[in-house]
Length: 408
Ligand SMILES: *Cc1c(COP(=O)(O)O)cnc(C)c1O
Image (cartoon, rainbow, N blue to C red; front, side):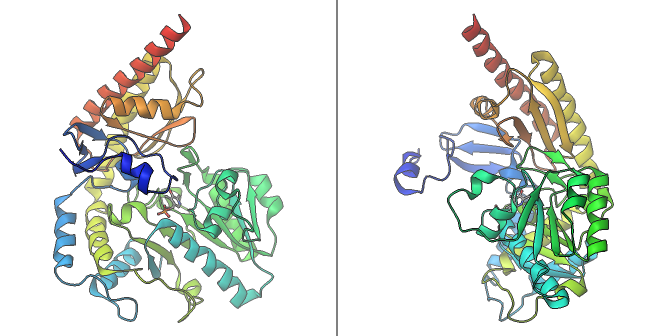
């Protein structure tokens, strides 16, 4: 028994989150245990972060080995893990250059600032408009939350940065209408994660690319949630066959250790000259050491093909539960980023389903009020998938039973 209590959250921490009542103390693979020793199956992976599950031996080794060598130098010095990781990311993607930071929001902040600066350097300060999309999520700094498409996340934080216009997602006509030569960047998620697990249409991404080329604007792909194998490709742009000018990656990159990166071409990177931008911890050796191990494992073809096998197994199970109880209208997303859209009369109750699953010993996520999101470890064992599905079925059965009783 621990003397540390959940009640302390309400006493000592700012109330911006609403964490579960249980407190996890240990994880291994796709299982977690709370203070009382109760076991949970993890279909959430820390919001698509723990791509290799909890306490993966190779990541523990990479981190402890680095911890015994060098923790931090600040960017007056570059370290071996940072050099190795930058070289690796360049080899695995379209990019020529990498900038490291600590979180998704910071990676997007850097991408947006760089896009503005690039336009300023080459075309003058009038070219500063940024196009983004309704329901998008790009982080919680003032710039990124303004670029994001959720009005409620911006409310009361004004004055907000200007020059950002939101357009309907997957609407080519609206995009064409909004574009002009003052646009410096378009920021888009290949699959809107927080916004409800909604994939961009391939034609839509291709049109963004064309218009960016036509108007000399930069295409920023926010792959913070979709990157590092989540969709079955190392990065989703590779499956969509649309190459961005800037790409941001975070979440799974450190497998649970905070690290993020902004990737781009030589030409664009040149605008981030000495002194233009920076971060105290960005590219710190601990984060880079773990990310090197993550990328080595995830970029192996066995892990990426395993993603589609696991997707199939999960999707079949979820669809079966959906049919049995009539709770899901649609199962969408790519790879192991799965959105289960609630059907009538369950619309708006995603959090209830998440809570019911937790009561049965299963962690799932929501993506808005209407979508249950499943984003497990990319290497979740098949047995954990099957047992997790049993728990999900029990949770759904209980919710339906409660509704039946309320109606009767
Ligand atoms: C999580 C997320 C972010 C923000 O990342 P943080 O590390 O929380 O700052 C940005 N964009 C997308 C698509 C995300 O899923």
